[in-house]
Every structure is written in structure tokens, then in C-alpha cells.
Length: 91
Length: 244
Image (cartoon, rainbow over all chains, first blue to last red):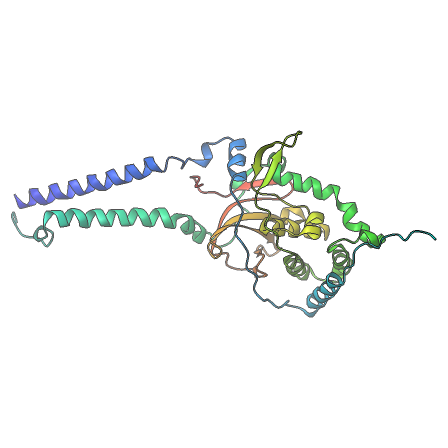
């Protein structure tokens, strides 16, 4: 009798867990197999993914002096970049 | 032996229900939440050679292909600065100097130079862009805008522009398209969808160039790869099931 009771409890618990799983699957009804979509649909779903994570730069040192020197030169040029000169009116 | 008491039988029925249900729910939640990163963790390196992920030609991915076409059409403007200083807007002058002197660097040094150089550009979150018809009426939104190298050097951009600009700049330095891919991935560190550049090296390793200045040469843990493209093809790395 006790074994019968324990097996009933076990079966009922499994059924309850299964019910929860099914409910979750129905709720997440936008989970679709990618492979079954046409190529154009897969491209469309790709294009809908919003690439929006903000970046955070960390301080890193170039591995060689040659790279570091070029980057310093670039920074100098960017710092001193001037706007295009305006042509002067002839007197 | 019939009727033998077990520890489970000594617990009240309601508690037994609760215990089994809690364990079951816990397992389900773990599987649902961890699966994207479980798959990412199983493939620590970007799967450059996963030809089964090849989706289609790049022309069908119009928002990306527009950037490829725009870059091709703006190459003359990129290099005009070398001949005419009045054409040197934004970072064009330093860009031309980098290309001029990068010939003296090894391939690895060129990759490193491009990563640092592009990452120094101004960060500009482009949000969503309006798509308008001929009358100026908004007919939709473009979520992501892939920038050409010329536009990026003038105006800056955000992470997808950093990745695409590194791609175009390495192409200008002669690196083959088949060794380069702009990769979109979920970043565990940043907590969102991010874009990086993947570079395949001759020894088979794959370097990930991120906008945080780090080049990941061994483990790519923390990235859940979604899709990738170069100027010719698009790869779809998503799992069997699409998660929006």
C-alpha cells in the first residue's frame, strides 16, 4: 500500500513537471527552428538583431615599438588636423 | 520487502510534490538560461571553417552589402588626401600615413596597428536610422547601419562600424577577404549583442579584434557567435533554434 502511494506521488510529480514544461514551450512560441526558414527569412531575422552593446576600452600596449611609433604619429596628425583653408578673395 | 519505509515516504505528500517540482523547474531554468553560453563555451574558438554555417551570398544581406558598395565607391575619396591636403577631413591624413608606412610591418603588426588605430576613432552610437520614402515620410527603421571606412574616419561610429572599418582597412592593406570576417556575437562581458572582426592566421588560429583594444588569440570564451560576413558571403552560426 505504501509503495503504491509513493509511486502515485512520483507519477503525479512527473506529470506536474511535464505540464510546466509544456506551458513554457507554448509561451515561448517565437522559438522556431532556424534550419526550416528560407534563406531570405533567415537574413531578415539576422538583420533584426540589434547590435547595440557599448564598448569599454582597456589600456593595452602595442607589442612592438614599430606599431607604437606609428600610432603615436597618427595621434599627432589627428590632434593637429586643421579644417580645409578658405580661398582668399583677390584684391 | 513490501511496506518498507523509505526516507521519501516519511516526508509529507505536499512536501514531496514541492521537492520534485522544484528540482524539475530548476533543471529547466538552468537549461534554458545556460544553453546559449553552453554552446558558446563548447566552441571556444570562432568556427572559421564551419562551412555548414555558410548561408548565402553577401548581396542578399542588403544593409551590410550597402557598406561594401559604399566603401568601393569612396576609395578615391579615401586617398584624395594624399594628393590634396584640402581633402584631408577627419582622420584621413593619419589614415593615409598609416597605409603608406604599414608596408614595413609584418602581417601580425599590421593587424595590431589596425585594431588600435580604428579603436581610437570617435564612438558614436548611431541608434536607429529612419528609412524614408521619396517624400521624406518615414516608412521604417534600420536597426544597424554598417559604415564604410571613409564615413567612419570622418564621423566615427559604434561597435559594428569599428568591426567593418577594420575589415575594410585590412583589405586595403592586402589581407585576403577569405581570412577576414565581421562577426556579430553575444558578449557576456558587455551583456549585449556586439560586433568584432575575426582574422584567420596562416597557422590556423583565429584572432578576434575587439573594440576594447584586446586581441583574443586563443580562447574566445564569452562570445556566443550569431552570424558573420565578408564582402562575398554570410554565415549563420545560430543554434538550431532561433532566440530573438
